[in-house]
Amino acid sequence: MDPEKRKKRIRIVLWIIGIIIFISILTGPYGVYQRVIIAGQKHQLESQINRLKAEQELLKTESERLKWDLTYIEKVAREKYSLVRSGERVYQFIPRSVLSADPHK
Image (tube, rainbow, N blue to C red; front, top):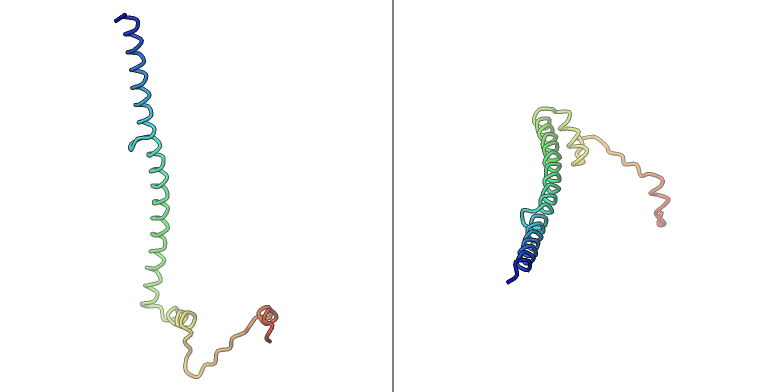
């Protein structure tokens, strides 16, 4: 075989191998594309963790208040569970916009 043809074939094979390596670096399981996707997922999960930690702090604070703060306990009982003291009357006011929107009244 001619040395020039041999060099040309080696060069072509090396280029093909280089292209295959380059493509695998970009798109393989540990490639750049996957790293970008994983970095985005990491950022999203970190944001979710921070949000959940803040929510957990609020729940801890509310839990402590529900243990010791009688005024807060009464407020929650009235607002969330519609509880009233004996002898109390509860008046509910219906906004005019709701009354005018209802054709049966």
